[in-house]
Length: 181
Image (cartoon, rainbow, N blue to C red):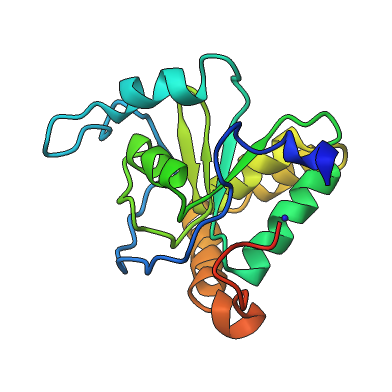
């Protein structure tokens, strides 16, 4: 974020890949129904094209994260340590799988500006992704998520964006070309 933790990652795929610059776009939506914007200009239905690859045999959600961000890698380690039932899988946004899953979620494949949680039928970004991830963890995190849902989405996302936009300055980047988990 060791042999037992390797099972958490997508099978036969690298969880980490070299960094790719974000395109600077900040799309403002909390949850994306995958069919709403899953097709690209070439007519590819990214939901259908990724369903068999990522959700046919394993329906656990996939947490997409910035693989070179120290804060993000720490967040994955935190989630892994508090997900005793191994209910979440992980994939770096910069990996080929991460790019496909971003497209599935209606996001640009080079947008590494937000953590994304991809479920079979829905994707979440920014603070909604964080709260949804908390719901999958052990007690007391689902209760914390319920409490934080009382804060309006736009306020949660302003706080999220402030941290996300300064994450490299505040927490640094990995010195290597791949994530540390």
